[in-house]
Length: 606
Ligand SMILES: [Zn+2]
Image (tube, rainbow, N blue to C red; front, top):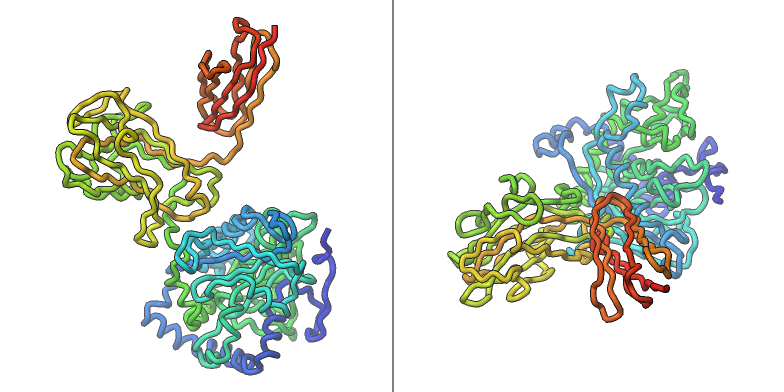
């Protein structure tokens, strides 16, 4: 049980008692103490951004940077700093991947005004509520250009951290902050939910020499306020919807202030957020809350993401916040540099599972496939279908020409980050000819962010041949096909990868491919058998998730197959084999569901 949200912290430097919902201001004050010149610079920054907003806006228009309709994507790395010495997921701040993944749909929706609770924006604020046009991707590429899940995990014996230890824990894991938004997820002391480092830049009043440093530039979020599942799930947690990161990004990306300006009736330098006397900690979302600043009574915009209200109360940014954040963003070299980061490489066009290509329609390019040399010398559609109801496939005519030597067929980008057991299945048909076997089919993968293709496997010689037919300039019939199943666990965790089928022709024979199917098995298969021992029927029961073929095979002790039963069923199947004619002995029953096999010793006792 945690108490951090049940008590208010009292801070001397503020006129009212506040809970440190967001410690960005405290963090800023810490920096001011450390680097006094920054405070003066920050004041000038506000002055400059106000007085010169119009001029800046004009300059940005001229530079093509003021386009408020343009969408930008920011790569994010999540550094989990935990104290689980054995690295146990879910223990001691070592939050699960699933909890991390749950954060991104929230912040992306919030920053695009695609959140489902926009209906809770009061009519009086609807005209200023806006899509901020920023998105956030969990990085698919690390600083060395290698594929990544965008998550780092670092053990440190410290069980919790105070913002004063900022440089210490940020130093444990850091990626260049001009290429990534670094988000450190730690167990934060006290009642802190998170804090950010504001942008610093070349705008007057923010000389780069006052920069508090690239190495601390990013956002810190408490493990109990990150994402929507896992550690955030405890009774009464009003910060369980992932809005802490949406709030902190406002500080980090565009220097957005809290609506009350962090002092009594102060300015947030945004004209369309009502004046507000002080922080609002409402977790029950009273939309009638008013603020009285020297006689000016306003309805508070408690729905603004920059408030201290509960997660369920928040649902909007304003046009003024959008303008301010875009101006600040463009004035800060580290923020601007992120736009050319390869961190999100390969993302944005990911296909969903199952990704099936059966070549029935002329839609390869529409579906994101890239076909090199789709002409008489390259891959082309063929009127011979693989298994099932397929009428067409794709082929390369090695028998008639060796010109299409390296022709390839590359899949769309595929996101394997959340894939449990990714695999590739396809139908292949190839025959030997009288000249011998020398063609090769190479299957490789690449995220298209580098020019390097990595070998998955290759088929040549007997591994390519699928039929006993010997035919020059081969054309397949139904029995000439074979289904190939490839485990793609090497791709697990990669966001944005392509898989390529490449022909290495030696002028031997035609290769046919059909029913390419990328999919994942996200469930376990549970099989049980009963009764065992038995003297007549043995039942087998398989539980799984999906529509799969279920195969039961019974073998004797020398491995001879005695019985086989096949069925296809959704989610579960119960079958029975009649063993009453078998002699008393031990047998082996293998039950296979979607290529996963479970084996049992079965005793027949009479
Ligand atoms: Zn804040």
